[in-house]
Image (cartoon, rainbow, N blue to C red):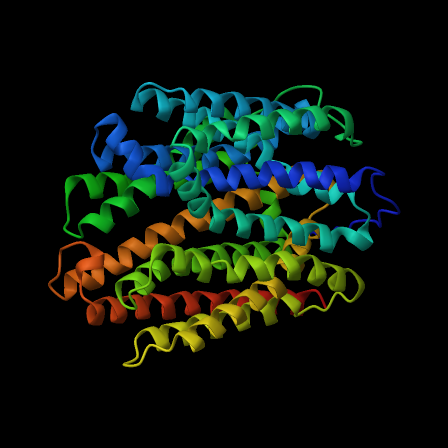
Length: 476
């Protein structure tokens, strides 16, 4: 079994903190733009006079394109160089943001959103590698903690930021605001984003594998979306399930035989990497289940306004901002094997308690807020150590694939969390004989269904805890 261990990096880049700021800015823009449209969707739907099913593609196209392209650009970076690909991503993301803001039709907006996601994938796919390489070994945990905090912040503030911008400036500015930020980032990056790297002499991308991967991800997301609408056996659902299974099987078979695969399957021979990756995807699935369903509980059951719910959901990212770098700093100096497992265990307990409180006869907001605090603490203890171990588990030559693969499963986990929430809620409501909109289901039915899904999210975190414990055992 491969057991490559990285040699110590005596010193990182002299500009490492500027590089960190540049990369995190790119990551934040990429994550925020995945969710910022949600609040503006009703306004955009009315502006273009289209149905909600049509306008939802503004969000769906971005998330699917971003997730599908991460592994591809991880390979492209080996030829172009990470810094050059990142700069190209900034240019493409910024220019397409301008194009989104001046779009005159829904079709044009969706097209430019796909191009925007392409630029985001260029930045996101190699962000972990650039930061990991820029910092010396003794500071890597803290630096990786900032990535976790940035992703958490971006996924939470996106809808809030979108609402403020739409109210004050109009929907076009949720895209146009990226332009001055991107231009400033490009100017600073062109001067300071300098890293030592060896580039491949030729561009060798497995395009057949790339098509299979895109087919799998698109069909999987479409299948979950169809299931959230109806659980009856329909030709569409059967076809999507068949395409999803066949494309995944074909992708794995093709990659195992290809000389230069899109996804180097040898990385799955490193048990530490596999276990940390399992914990990571379960972390994001569970978190997004809470993020998606919590607002429906607080508004539909407890009668809170959207702005009040937004304040509640600032608790976790606020803790992440302060705690993730601190945890990373501690982990750099005291790399305890079960740090991540402890964090995931606290998260599991927090989600199960949330579910119990949400389904109870008495809805105590103070206890729910306390559960959000402990959820944030658990996330802080988990993210930095787990992210660091994902990168350290593979040899230096596989850094690009490590970064792009973890970015892929991170986004896939978030997409799965959103989709599974809809599927599980729809299934329970259908079993109860209710087929209307979720907020009109009534407080009792709403609280019981959301409660069960929150507990299921906690169960997923228990599985993540077991994976983290096992990783600690084999690293002993």
